[in-house]
Image (tube, rainbow, N blue to C red; front, side):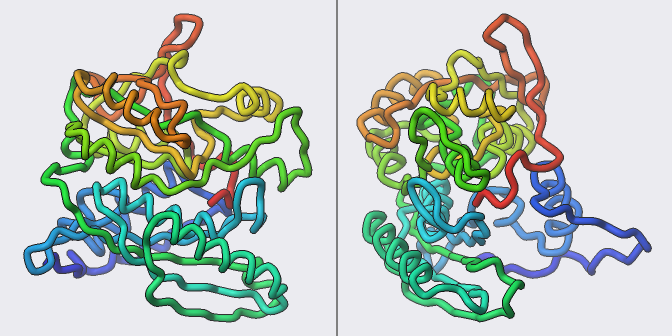
Length: 348
């Protein structure tokens, strides 16, 4: 079993003041991971830089993941913070190629929270757990003073079993791989913003929050050689691709015309000045796999309603390592960098 222990003493104080901006993400998060957390807590499981840790326990391969949810508002079109808490951790396990089995749930509740809200969230978590075929087996609650908790914060951790012999991780990505996304992008972020800002669009836009193990398992059962999977949550497709490119030491190029974005979401993003490539999703993932498998994987994914918009959007290249490039609709080419912050904070 992998030991989780400090790899070195805590970094010495330098007198620097570091300001963590509210909603900070992207480059800042990556810098914190690389410059603070990895040096202090470093071990083989963390060095994989995956959505969860894959561990050996008495001969069994298991995956373990944890995540915290601070979304605002708590309830939004298509779901609520409870949906995100269950689906998010289920999906992190699925991205490791693991069948999700068990979850824990920790609730930070603000004094004065209406019980009807809490009951709604808890009921939603139960429904999502049943849909994903996982059990919530342990948990904790804490109450903080009024004004200190923003209603509800939820932490979930999950355990799953890795049944495939494939090493599904960033290190397995190779030049020549294709990049497939499982569906149209941006609906979750736009749904959150519509409620947060009191906006109404011509077409109803609901969050894409959903469990993803079923379509991932379908790819595995079809014998598709998956090299890496990554869910497209905070920072959207662009941030996920940048993370993989950096960890794998490869370049990634995507074709803008191939990226699936629904017309309602595209129109809303144009109005709001958002780039859908950076908008968060809660029921979408990217798959890195051999080019020969791309067409078959898209066909297999499209058999699931949540993956109806699946498409092959790009490829992995040996040059421009660690960089993601976009071939635009008008024939230009530009770098898709990781944002220094987030377009939409408190999104998941």
